[in-house]
Image 1 (cartoon, helix red, strand yellow):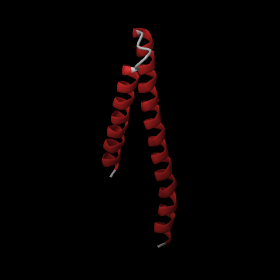
Image 2 (cartoon, rainbow, N blue to C red):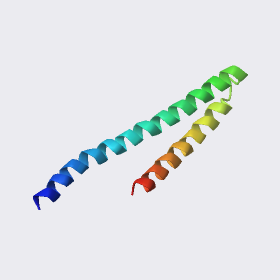
Image 3 (tube, one colour):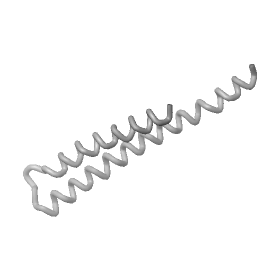
Length: 76
């Protein structure tokens, strides 16, 4: 009985750390994608409508969600 309580206490912080790390990974993927879009727009000279910034930001959001769902389903 006491061993089950000890294992639960040890498991809770690892879950919290795992999911917060996944949040930081999602933020990094989105940030890198948006930064790449900004640099591509600057390199190509798109100043009025930042086409690549919008496209890379949206693609990176979908990539981050896909990575999160894939990792979440794999852990279960």
